[in-house]
Length: 279
Image (cartoon, rainbow, N blue to C red; front, side, top):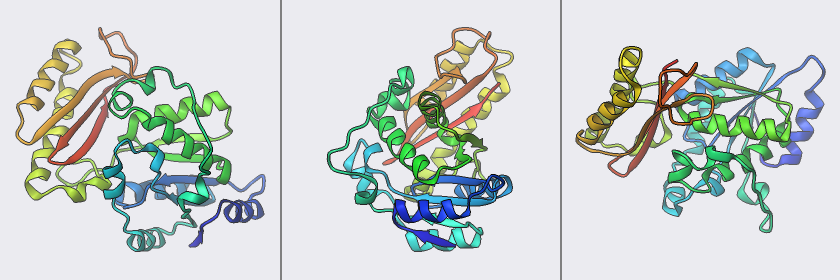
């Protein structure tokens, strides 16, 4: 696996490789890799000729400086995992490599920047789009692979790609879960055994929605699921919503061709998100 620390070095290398018949896949990450990330590497390897994984803890998408400081950075373990997964290239830039002090960025994301994660973490998706656009222009990938766990993020990046008319295909890959159902996350290492057990209710409620959304009124079903979470030990619920899967607008009837249920909660000091595509 080749490792690059500069945008110019990576671009030069990729330009030397790329031909009309040679495709590049990008898997953007913030490190602290787990099997969910590695599943993206595997899918990318099956669909493209060369896989680039980026590891960059992006400061502009953190709305809490303590969260940024506490984000895990086990880089040696990450490198070992990527080598075992046969990743071709690791892009490992510094903050100064990716950002100039005077640069500014803003993209109109509409309601996607104001609802759910956007409401709770104002400015978060501006930071996400800023860095992902930099990665796209550096790597120039044919395909970019993202996990479904960050469903809203995927829609945000899709909106950016459409607005800027970027020539990249976005691939959303399935959520990878622990054996007990908890969605894999780099933040799970902060959970105590009890908090881990408490957090299982998130996936259990999503399964409850999967089993009942075809036969029950969606608004009442959402209220029932919310009550379950609000009464669950160790859970500080931030939101649970059933939304139009295309734009995350709240639903008020069953007449939607696509539906997604999304949840966010704090378990102890750890913030977790999860979702399920209902239709």
